Image (cartoon, rainbow, N blue to C red; front, side, top):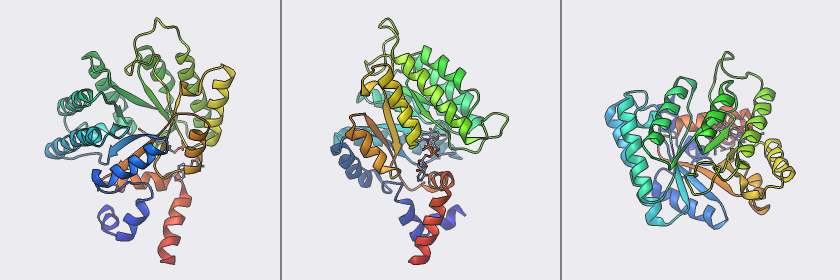
Length: 305
Ligand code: FDA
């Protein structure tokens, strides 16, 4: 199915609503335009679940080139990385050494690397590798917490104590009810709760550990396109008399552009997650699965064509 779809020109045209080109050269003008309109960016060189050591090393090299390209183009962008892209499912030592290379290169440019969170078989390992990097003094990184997992409140609290920069998401993978809320309303309620815990941490005293970007406590990244969740965060900030810059909203390229613009107009920092590259199949399938209307949009455009 993957081969069929990725070789289909129409499918690429449809996917390019969510994917900013197949190379960094194609992505850079898009990032520059977003920067000019007030958005910060996180770039994702698409790829995950690499199956050989060579692939994991090649993916790492491509992320190093991405960091070089960001600096050379002087765009406002950091980088998001999936650990299975750089070898997590093959060999943990390889993955750690690849991640360390990426963090060192990012540090050279004073840049930041977000470790995306994948499906639950990788949660423990992802957090362990993140903590290992922090223990080695690599402060220019942070992780993602998924509101659909029951464990996330405990994880978030422990990570905040360590001064971790957290991106809060609902969660994009199919998980069993034994470990994740099956009902959307429960995921939403947990999202609000975790967002408030993260905002609460921002109001802690100045004796807290120093944040990786010099701003501490770390700025919570509120990653969602859910207008109600976003409104709740804004209301919480207003109630606590906190400035808009207390949080950073994050949204995916091509989704709810109206909401992205609105947050910028209101003076909130917004970062757009911009994926690019040829390995867009899995990313695009998750975007279709999140919203069945996207599948309909895809099919109706095909038949109209
Ligand atoms: P929800 O699914 O309730 O959608 C709210 C509204 O947003 C919808 O009503 C619709 O209008 C719009 N919308 C949402 N998805 C859409 C789509 N695909 N197409 C069109 N409209 C859509 N997940 C993960 O497990 N690990 C990770 O590391 C990350 N990283 C990440 C970074 C950033 C910046 C974002 C914004 C999201 C992620 N995610 C993620 C994905 C996240 O877990 C979640 O799957 C999506 O954000 C969709 O959920 P919402 O929070 O938008 O809410």
